[in-house]
Image (cartoon, rainbow, N blue to C red):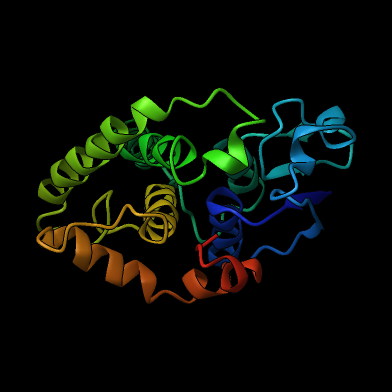
Amino acid sequence: MYLYDAFGPNPRAMRMFLAEKGIKIETRNIDLMKAENRRPPYTDRNPGGQLPALELDNGACIGETVAIWEYLEEKHPAHPLIGTTAEERAEARMWQRRVELKITEHLYNGFRFSEGAALFKDRMRILPEAAPGLKHTVQDGLKWLDGQLAGREYIAGNRFTIADIILYCALDFGAGVGQKMDPSLKNLNAWFARVDARPSAKASLHPAAAQTGMKG
């Protein structure tokens, strides 16, 4: 079994998950900046073309980050990041989807359609006219989440979960590409500082982060 790894916020989230779980997996680096993930031989293994991906010993390839996390948590239940009961797992998955649908997907497309357009124009349909609205939608979602975080240590209460990893990696990336958090969102900024202080936050940064100026 080995992990297809790369620079970028989603691969970083994968590395942060592994660090929190204490799991070691052999990695194979794919050059995302050169679009190696968008052509064979990588797309022969993972036709979705996204990163990260996990290739199993039987040759099967899992190409969705959260699906990889689900698989690994079942195999390695210690230090749970989804949950140990049906209720905990449902809560973590609920917040994971809220974070993605309200914030992170808009943040990434806001980048791809504007600052990242030169990098992505030959990989996907670019809609520059949508970028300002997407960025405003991110800020709306963050303001909403700030209210939800009142009295909570982490997004799903007092448990650190995959929802925290997804949002932290997105916001740390966003800060370097023109999508900073509003400093008036006190709950959200306090939450970010707590996650940023975890050893996995620094350990998960790719060496290319220093060269690109982006946190991935």
